[in-house]
Image 1 (cartoon, rainbow, N blue to C red):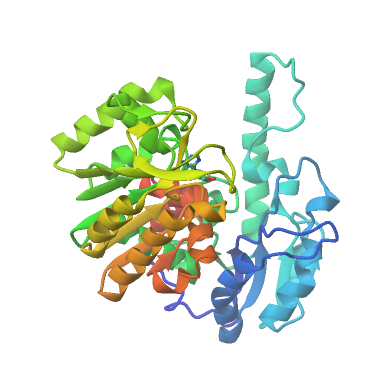
Image 2 (image 1 turned 90 degrees about the vertical axis):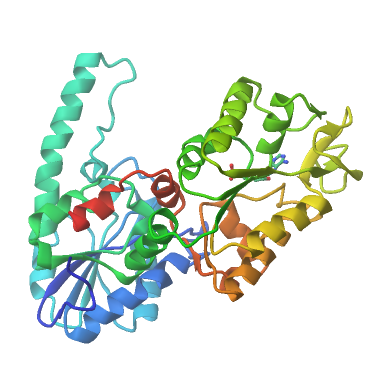
Length: 418
Ligand code: AMP
């Protein structure tokens, strides 16, 4: 497989798919440029080699072409500043031929939002709500055809293809996967960010040092079921925390008061417990809870066993016994995966459990463990507690990471790995 380090971009035009889907305020000022910064090492390496950049991204979910609210022109000056070159802008990602042809080594061109065209995602747009099944089928077929043309145009701009957009690696879109077919194996590669993400996922899915502990939190078991099932075939310890605790407690006959619970998932919870036993996985649920008499930061609180929550109270975080028990298991681990908070961490009075988990992961990491934190709220947790630098890797890809740990093959990765 080709790698970015082994490729000399001198005199080459590189089509680089990045994830510049950054949040902007009402005046189009970028409020968090983490995703742009994450792609800089790749972009800078190509320029330093004497290559030229064709930078491509999506932003938001535009519904038409053009959709000024989602234009990437608002970020051009910031990208220029970070990259240290004046980035040019192509107002139509399908009509950039002249600008691409004029690009000199060391120059960069940012294409307008790829998703202005429905062909990027390959999903029909503007279908009438009462469209018949036949009309829907015809529209799908038509967009798949025009997607081929769209992809071909993007590919025609460049000599080589670099995918550095892990955040969209779980999508089989034109610029994230299909375009790779237009390049020989030695002319397509991951960017540095993508390489790091792929390596991190590999360390928790394949190249596992034991013991391996996964901590899954969050609100519902139903949204994590595929991940839990896949992890049950891989981990030594599975800590299940957060709101899903109470579905398990109720399933086992416990009292959960007003705690969040999915009543239609009680059998599923029992099934997970059974599978864990069959697979020899040490499944750990919180033994105690910090319960509150309202869903509020200022509610009255008490620590109670997680299966004895009084009527009128709800479990909002794990209690001190669970913190200690979780920390002990985490600190003895060599591979750690954390997804989802142990409680309602948005309220300052219910952050203690998530903080304890984060701190235990940092300690284990200092002792040589590999730790991966990812998927939505756990990233917010480590950032909120200032622990991000103490873990081995914080994933930038929410949905993509979750699909990868569900065991799915990500189209953006497969397109390059073959
Ligand atoms: P998820 O998106 O599934 O990872 O869930 C994250 C959300 O779960 C956060 O917004 C937390 O506030 C919420 N959460 C965690 N623990 C609880 C709990 N015990 N009760 C209600 N919500 C919770």
